[in-house]
Image (tube, rainbow, N blue to C red; front, side):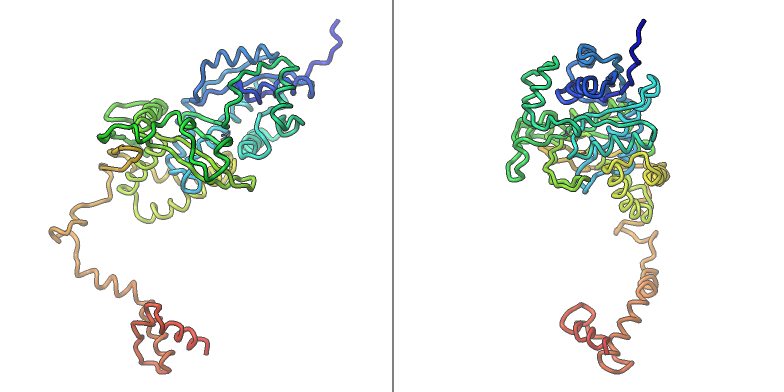
Length: 434
Ligand code: ARG
């Protein structure tokens, strides 16, 4: 008769790397848990997810779930990011920040399917990803317990971790000596640490794998036409493609033209600045194209206020608040703006650069008849005077009062100097204090 209590189960987000492999052993040995490994495909580079799954089984996982999330990543995460032209600090297109809530959602689903009370991730205590996993998991099931072994174990230094790995039969291959910390998915690659920690050091050539060095790219420009339907890219050079395929294909086209590299100092949510490099060829090209189409199709006030809300959207997602009421409300605003963002943008890629060479839409608010300087039938230039007089009335009233105060008489006219902030202005300020 088996008198042993059944062990509690934990679902671990498993990548196959050293950290998450050691996590399996640590959860089994130190926490006494049965480990279920979940392996998510979000379009990252890999040499066979089945091989990774086999490694998890070899390490004693009681179950392994390989979940293909690529389509969902494109349609639910990348598409929303694009609607919001999402760029944290106006530079970083949020690639890692987008995948974490999706992986969290599947961790929670796997935990429910297996009756597990705990989930675990392999993030350190110094990064943003721990915040994103844990906040997302809490939002989806506040009753689940989250374990972060790397944050809790006393294997802080690499040699200690390797010693633990060797003691517990975790294969330690040479490739773990990779000098950088890398995270990648369909939207791009993030590279940090190693030589990059010195912000004065130029990124070594070997960090870039999906973008060519612009020096080595073709001497003639490459043009590509991106078709959008309601804000979502749907075709490349007239060929209709599912979003995931379109992004993958554009990564190759733009990357081979040397486009898509970012080297920045970034403010992490946990309070420190870090030096980050990214390769996001398709992402940056699509955001640029999408913005160009919005310029053509969105009404002025919608466009202007959207710019401000885009920053808030990016901050929310960067800070791990994908599943939050505010982010959902922002999504609703973004969605409400996209129905007319339908048309085509022509991009010109050349030696590490990408420019918009043309844009067209059946929903354009741009009206050539109104904009042209050639003939004036559609725009009544004489009407402009009344518009300027009325919109400037409050300025005029203010200027006259300032001038009167300066001169000490109600009827005096303001000096040109005073109105232009030149020497007279200080005197105006003083006069008003009296
Ligand atoms: N700094 C980025 C972010 O917080 C990327 C982090 C990616 N992780 C990595 N191991 N390189 O979203």
